[in-house]
Length: 290
Image (cartoon, rainbow, N blue to C red; front, side, top):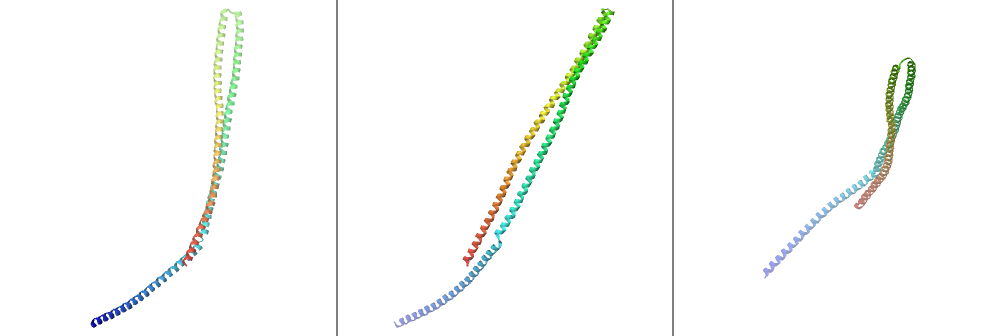
């Protein structure tokens, strides 16, 4: 029993020694781990501090760069230059349109004047031809009357002469002579009548040709008037279309100018709003980080 008690005592002693040693080792390990952990935390804290300080510096630098950038002013200048250039191009287009309208109006005036001059010349030539034809017809009619009078007078004179000669010869010659004279008189009258008919046919044919020419000239004058009227109608329609186009063009360019002004204003406002929002976000981020 004593030996057993001794052995139990020894075992308990060894257990106490082992427990004490284990506690000592554990305490040393915990202390070492705590020191290592604290050192690691310190290092991480310092690194995080440096990172946050760098972030704050970067945010502050970005904030300053945004402030120095003057985005609103730059965009406003760009938009103003763009608007000035666009307005200059619109004004140039308007000037070109006005010049084109002026040239078109001048061309219309020249065309109208030329058409009127051509019409007047054609009318004058046609009127001159008509006058010549009418004068020719009158002269032919007059010549016809004079010729008929001359033929009638010649025939009457010849008949009177032959009759007088016949009467004189009748007193001296026999009935045979009278018959011969009658035959010559009849033949002469037939020849004169044939010549008169031929002359009348020629005169009638010539008069008919002159009348046809007169009708053609009068028809040409009517066609000239119709062509001129059509030309005037075409000119009026062209002028009407030009005025309509000019009005629509002016309205369109005015609308473009107004829309450009509104667009420029909206762009500047939007950029200014975005710039303010960005500055505010950067400022809030800086405050939160600090």
